[in-house]
Image 1 (spheres, rainbow, N blue to C red):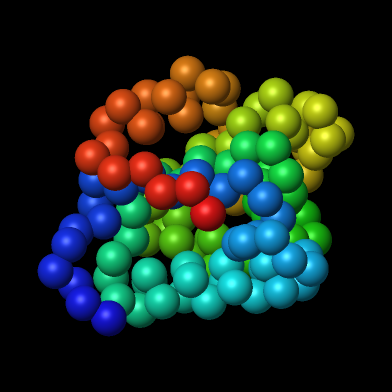
Image 2 (image 1 turned 135 degrees about the vertical axis):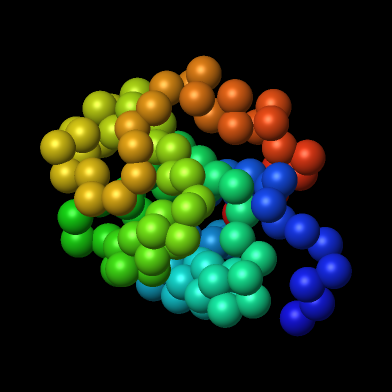
Length: 118
């Protein structure tokens, strides 16, 4: 994988319980592989924003908690939509990241040179 283009000014948006439109288990496996490769190649984004179904990945019971925790410890801001957490009744179950509002997500996008939706 080429390291020619920097991800340091990139924001990734996660709006599903994984990556792509498939069975949830496959979506989660694909996203886990994607995130693992970003870490291995030291191409981490500035922030990852989770909203709609994506918030289910940062709560207790998510198979991606360990990977997301490592990414957060590496300095990536994990921003979680608080409205979505409330909607799904998951506010008390957050295990990684910080609950924020839409202004926090917009701020991350405005500071980014590139925004990628998975």
